[in-house]
Image (tube, rainbow, N blue to C red):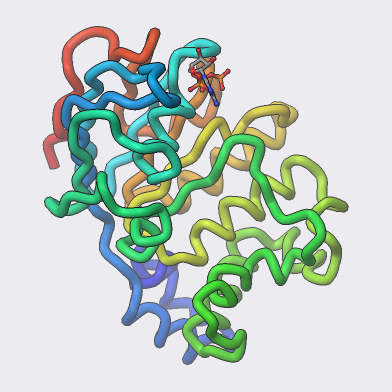
Length: 256
Ligand code: ATP
């Protein structure tokens, strides 16, 4: 189901996009289970992540907290496939993905909202949303894609007012919304968010928390943050990372 349909929001209809949105709904993925076993990763011969285990149930939202240099970005980018695994395994819905390149993990349903947002500043807001489709060599008239864009603009209305502007002209908060919308354009089953609150005013972080609460349950989420803030109110469970290790007892699957 689509995000709105999965949250029971579809009944009020989507105006002229209703039919297209229903088409997208049929194609959307169910939330995935993420299992990380004894993961070691780092940079070249440097190991930063030392034997991390994660179990995230389908639809669960896990928060990972840790101070500067704890290894949060290293961990999340390794799961996304942007850093190689030194040892251990990563499974998405029971399928090993730790040897797959990043783009194949995206195809399997994994999406990353990277630290610092990394929207493509030279492209318009709309092109940032289209970029996943363009990367797959498809045209933007694809009805499923158009329905997804419509869904994103309903969820993030400020983007709709700025579709033709360059992404660099957006505020930090709007860029973060765009980065999240761009990740959701991939129709993910697992959404990884690396410090989305970074550099944002508290009121903007509150708005972001509302959006994440809206998404919650429709996609499995792993949210990395340096310190406690309202975004952590959204998660079901949190763990702490320090010096590349999970503190306390190993994370266990949430009972559902
Ligand atoms: P922050 O909250 O500041 O983003 P973090 O918890 O995300 O910190 P990482 O960025 O994963 O931490 O860094 C963990 C460790 O890995 C640090 O000691 C850092 O210096 C090191 N590190 C990060 N990137 C590289 C790199 N490209 N090459 C070598 N070491 C790196």
